[in-house]
Length: 190
Ligand code: SF4
Ligand code: SF4
Image (cartoon, rainbow, N blue to C red; front, side):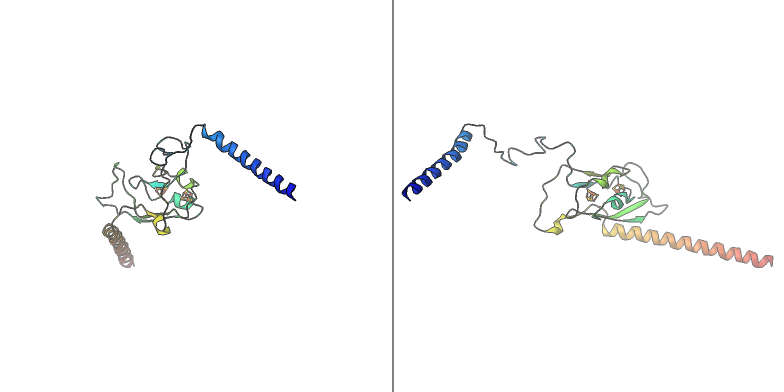
């Protein structure tokens, strides 16, 4: 009984010494604690892989509203809505001088669903959507992970919708007038 007790005590002391050996060996080695983010930041200190996939960004000056990215997204986390631009709208010009054919009145990405597969960026014809180095955007509320990229104001959206409706109405009236003129001519022939 006593012999067992003493051997258990020795085993305990031996185990503690083995554990302490590892601790003591680290006392003299170089410290590896990194004071993130004050003194060490993976992106700033170029410690991230070259093709890192982080939060997406959409440059709305380049986006043409083609919806390829929305169609490519396997988890449906991109939602795009567009309004057709009317023929004579003087505002329908991009900063680079290209004509705007579609106004992108909605371009939302739900980052709570995004799995950073990169499929949305690969086929974008204008490179408007791309992965950034931003990875620190955790939130206590899922709603904060819903990002809206369209820069159109509600007033602009209303005005572009109205212009389109007016153009449609004009086209319909012109088509009706052409039909009426055609049937008048047919009546005269008879
Ligand atoms: S694929 Fe590119 S251009 Fe087309 S809607 Fe998406 S971001 Fe815009
Ligand atoms: S990275 Fe993948 S999951 Fe995320 S928005 Fe793009 S296509 Fe969708």
